[in-house]
Amino acid sequence: MKRLFAIAILLCCIRSAFAQDEQKGVRFGLTFSPQLSWMTASDKNLNGNGTYIGYEYGLLMDILIPKNYAFATGFLFNGCGGKLTYSDPVKFNTYNDSIFAAGTNVDYRLQYIVIPLTMKLRTNQIVYMTYYGQFGFRGGINIRSRADISNLSGNTLDEKIDFGEDVGPVDFGLLVGGGLDYEITGNTAIHVGIQYYNGFIDMTDNTQDYKS
Image 1 (tube, rainbow, N blue to C red):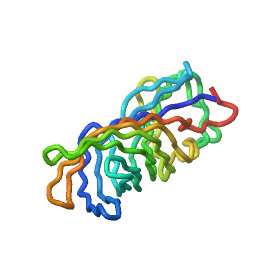
Image 2: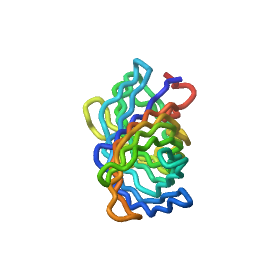
Image 3: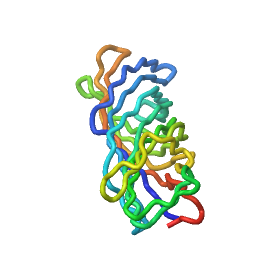
Image 4: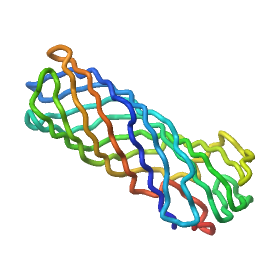
C-alpha cells in the first residue's frame, strides 16, 4: 500500500480577536488563515506534482495553565489539496470499469473539519506583545473531495468530480508553529503566526487490485 503525506504551511498571518477572561483562564477567538499545501509519497511510482493554495477558518480556544502555558484547540474548516502523477496504470474506486494509463495526473481538492490538540509556551508581555511557540497534533474528518484528472499530455479527462471514494475519511498528523499576540485593549488582541503541518495517514484509497 502506498503511503502519502499531507504537508501544509500557513504563509500569511492569522488574525484573531480574543475575548480574554484571565480569571477563568480561557480565551476565544476567530481565525482566517491562507495556506499552501502539497502531497508527497513513499512509493517511487507515484510523484507529487504541484501545490494547492487553500485556507483555514473557524474558532480558536486557549486554556491557560498557568499564565505562560496554554492548551490550544479549536474547531476549524480546512481547504487543502495537492497534485499527484501516477507513473503506472491505475484504477480508481470512482470509475469501476476504467483503467487509467501511466502518466495520469490527479489534482485533489479536499475539505476537512479539523480539531488541533496542541500546547503553547508563552512569554511574558513585552511592550504589548506576547510571543509563543506551539507543538502538538491535529486531526481531521474529510467532508468533501473533488478532483480534476488529466493525461500525460495535459488533456483534461474529467473535472470537478466527486472523488470521495478514493480519499481516506480521516487525517492526522504533527503540528508545530509560532507567533505573537499584539494587545489592542485589555481584552482584545490580534494574533499573528505561522504553522507547519505534516500528515501521518495515507490520504488516498485506491482499489485493492491497484495498490502500488
